[in-house]
Figure 1 (spheres, rainbow, N blue to C red):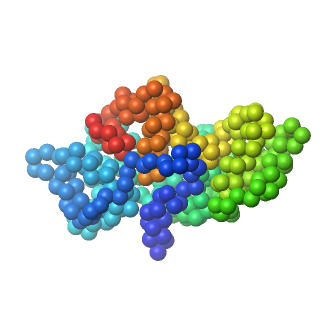
Figure 2 (figure 1 turned 180 degrees about the horizontal axis):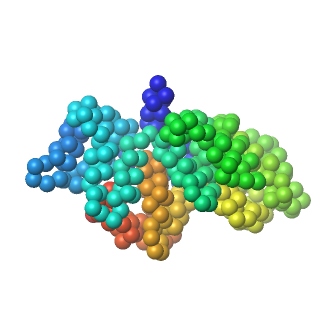
Length: 348
């Protein structure tokens, strides 16, 4: 029953993610295929991967990158019923003997995982090993609606042998950011779309009184606004603070916090105010310079493909003067590169 709940929650991506929208109609790159036949897709994938002559990677990429997550889960179920094999494992085999096989294997697993499971994976990765990537923690939890946070918590416990996401977050963070994350984990955000002007004004006055901001000394009201107020309310507060101070909310946060707390709070306010530009920057950071941050690249590709990945690509090109698909092609290789660019709507 718990698995069914996670599967169902992974189907409605846009409904489960509380993303701000600068663009009134953010554009995805992946849409549900129509008409759709899960059994036919499963048969075609099996044939493409088990041909006596040679495999057909193009057929695999074209099917998987042009199906919604809900449809991919249905294909995987039909594949298992028909061939008694795990589709995720079979797809992963196409990365054998390549330099990025582990990254492609990770992408293959997450392609067939409900969204809460994907997020639980990325939260765990952000806390594993020395240091913590605070920006990933707040990116996911500040940008998610209440029901998604509850489903992520459940998925985390199931995936990691009963471990508590809340306990791990408390162990891996400290100070103001820890308090914010604990508040977010309560999943008590208002989800009304109506904005009360007086309530906005009360929050603005509490956060900025007589030209004085001291969030680094007392972040309690800021944390309440970020974790408990509706997304439209929060964006109105940001707007009013910017109007009064002459600074962007990101500039204010940068001035108020230090080190990991700063990165966590900046990611939180940006993913709530300007998600497409924020994720364009995440992609740029993932592929610029030496090496590739495959975790970030896969995270953005799969979790945003049905929400706003096309708009993110447009923001990327506007800001960095380069196509994100071309950037990915230069920084990755093999089947991994082909699958990534296919999700962005390109070909190799």
